[in-house]
Image 1 (tube, rainbow, N blue to C red):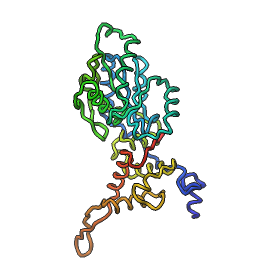
Image 2 (tube, one colour):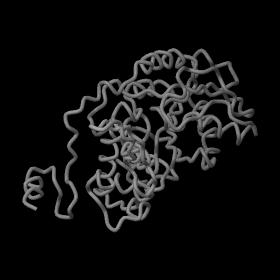
Image 3 (cartoon, rainbow, N blue to C red):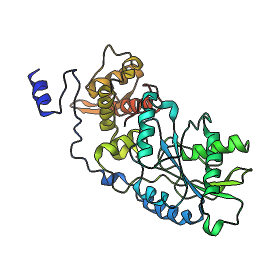
Image 4 (cartoon, rainbow, N blue to C red):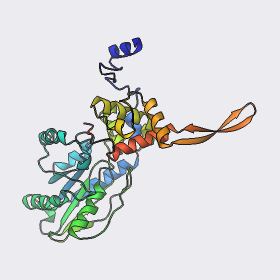
Length: 324
């Protein structure tokens, strides 16, 4: 108890409710979390911008509606009509939507659509909104063209490819045109144009997800990592799981207690992962060298348990949680 009191006085230990008041990031450097291929992707996107009539920026509405929007992308938004598609609305905390919408308006985002591209929810609103903006704005050297060229941009793993596939399903009754994955980096290059609508004739160009080369702080980077915008191994599944537990407790989101049949909320990631490993059968066989020879032992697989915890969060099985 005296140790907890000392930590609480320092501001990093449990608060009055028994949970940590701050998270210790351990001096982590986020510079290594920016993969090299993203710089190439950003250059390609700037070239493709010249042929674009409108930009559709896709972002993760559920977990990070405000964090992680790339400033390098936003610089380009000022010279083209812009629609912000906030995807994964089915995983978002609905209580946060009015505040999020107001903050987005303050940032200059006046054309916002909340979608669930997996189930085609609200996706039909995108084409009319884009067509209206293109009709109202100057098209410069593309003024005589009847077709609409739309550039789809955003950070990794927010549903850009899912949006394109959803639009094709709704307007053309066609199947997948571009690969979709649960990890960042599935789209690694600016692709050719993909038709998504006949009337008006509209083509979208999928682009690789691009993170800001310099993340604002470690906490923003951690939020992006929890949403799958940064590969898990670059950050570390163990620290990501610990930060997730800290955040859930801070927001009093105790869906994990019911999910894993715990008796009460927990603030120690080791205890939680041990319980998950035991109940979910996450074990591994290891060879131990002893004085009498090699012995095969079954041990709990903590990394696998941490991944299970992260996967449940991303799939919404721990409740509808917004990190911002």
